[in-house]
Amino acid sequence: MKHRAHRFCIAPMMGWSDTHCRVFHRQLTTHALLYTEMVTADAVIHGDRTRLLGFSDVEHPIALQLGGSDPAKLREAARIGADLGYEEINLNVGCPSDRVQEGRFGACLMSEPELVGSCVSEMRAHQPVPVTVKCRIGIDDQDEEEDLRRFIEVVADAGCTRFIVHARKAWLKGLSPKENREVPPLDYARVYRLKAARPDLEIVINGGIETVEEARAHLDHVDGVMLGRAAYQNPAILADVDRLIFGLDAQSPTRADALNAMLPYVEQHLSRGGRLSNVTRHVLGLYHGQPRGKTFRRHLSEGATAASATADVLRDAIAVVEHGSAYPGDRSRAA
Image (spheres, one colour):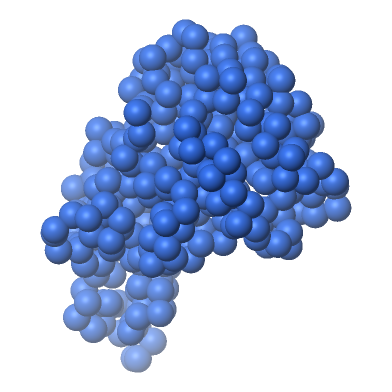
């Protein structure tokens, strides 16, 4: 059965996709599937689960992305994730960083489809939620179309029916993670052909997609679309997702709507000893390209980092950008 939320997903992004980011994104789209940052199986089993895996009810639907290559550890981590309430457990077979390779997980596992299949089989056997795989179209010189088809076939035989495919291959040697997101050419057609060859599988496309309109065009060829950096750096684009992708007849939230909806969450976070900047760092791009957008970013960047910063800093930033209000930093400069 297809998961409707997979029509539009927000990618797992290391250092970015924490619970505060997800709560913010949820103010802009109620239907998109949100992903955690990648968490290693060892960290899930032995680490601080509240810090690593905690999320609020508003974040549903939400998926946990795991990293690892030990089937037994992944089985236990998947069970823990399902018990915590995640609706999907995703296995990372796409990250090309050196640190990931040293741990024998991420994109390097595309050369070991049988091992990935064993991991998926174990992850599925001991908990009830779907297990999905996020991969590349290939790695290094192993990037023929047949290599991808064989990888998908083996892992699908293990019970995986949803694949999120980044439409670039990964160079495991010679390119940095950043370069691997930009240098290898995009090949959307290869992902389209994979879907055509395997209509029984749910295929979600990822990589280089900048707008919701582009995402909607991809849906003519695949089951779903995943946006990452574009959604983070220019989050206002998410406001049209429910209308354009999910067909909801509702008015898109405004930027101010999203920020005002965050204020109770911010107050609660501060009351538990958190810092304002933990949350506001994720909203800095909301007014990207808009009048007074730079002033908005500067106000939050300068005002939210102090340990004593309150939600009033965010309220002032909303007033600055929405109504052109001055704030103390500007008045002191003018003086």
